[in-house]
Image 1: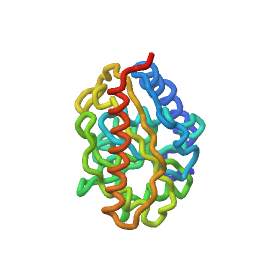
Image 2: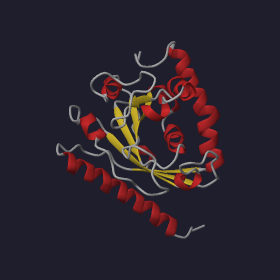
Image 3: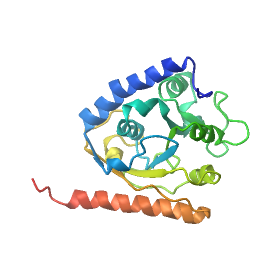
Image 4: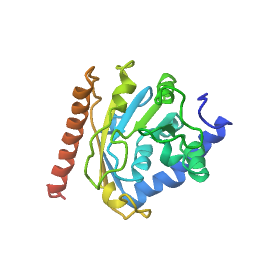
Length: 233
């Protein structure tokens, strides 16, 4: 059983499943509408890492709806400790409902005693060792609507000692317009998720980050091309 999750574990797993059933699926599939391109490329089990662009709080809800319901308790989003663990209410949601793995951003102070001793990515490494699926936003924070920000090197550091773990990129289109940064009520806006092929690891950090950026650029181009193409009825 994951040592960083609240106990009893069965209650946490139940809370997460109820969250997906009662909130994530209705919001994403009914209120917004979602089309997934190349769903078969998604990992069916861990260890694996799913990375996505980050424009909205809805990004996480969309990613949770993409994976098999049976695997949901083994899915671990990675999030900023200084944001999601900054007060008791958010901390409760982050741990008991979402099972977030807290990571410190830069020199941010520890919030609520969640900063791992030593390696800030240790909890992520432990999750992968248990065969879990990480959800990670390599931009590190929400950017401007439908615009990719510069990627952070955290994923490269995480995979240096385990380069064979599959990393699957997903480009999310439309969420930046549906609920951009600063907004709390989603506007109905159709969403597309473009799933890329698993990315190979590169020992040189700059090369790896460039590979990630190029992959997201290709997926974004596919999305833009689809939007310009008239419907064939």
